[in-house]
Length: 363
Image (cartoon, rainbow, N blue to C red):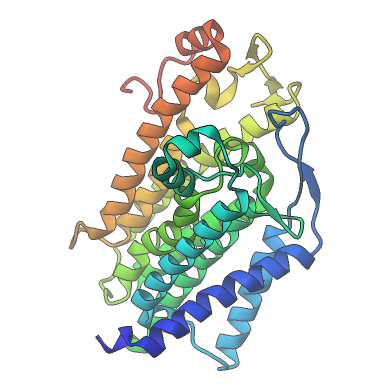
């Protein structure tokens, strides 16, 4: 276990910290369009600078130039995957402690149950919209999360090429799929401003660990698995996987885009027609008139396509779509409880109109 010696572990921690700091500096300094977030409980709105795509492209350019000019090899991220994973955990725990201490407010409940309230605050967070130097920490944290995921995926391809002198069909397909998925997030970063995480979740250990550890290291599992697998991918499998990915992506992106357009402009047209609503509040046009959470269904299809590029030699890559399915089924139920609490009988009417949760005619 020489890769886990103290020197390597400290270097990995320094690398993770430097990566996050550089992204933060880029987020603070690079220009970008300004957008207003969803209404706060107080009635106001926060302003966000949406320069994530520029930050992402700048990192991609630097990584590619460094690789081409032989300044470094991205494959080091693959070879040091475990030390980086451990370092990311340490970083996430430290950041959790910092944001907890920064936002901690004395209360009668905390005085009565100090341990319980401390653990609750650490895990669920204290502040709703913590900012540092004008940068929203919740929105920012998606950047090391997804840019880190993109760099790890690139590292797997570089490692395979350095080891075997070629890139497998499956690796190429996986890289294309993930590049489209991650690039699209930054292209439509404004949509994040209306998600539950940004609008209602406090910034604590749950979100921090998910952003800095779970997404980059767990979501990259299929790519890590593909490094030493060179079996050719049949043309029929390539076509089928591409069709599954594109269908899922269309469903995921299309449903989210319809919802965001409606929230920004209730008079928007959906599928060429004026948006139809219930009570002027709930969209029942497009995907949202068919199912209540088809965006989740589309995302599951996308991640299933990622896993299927690895074939069927091991169940390990399928932990990702399996976990995501469980997460999104739970989230769909949670969302429905919250929507009923918010909209009451109007939500009941909506469930009669859009009868299916995630899978038409089945669920």
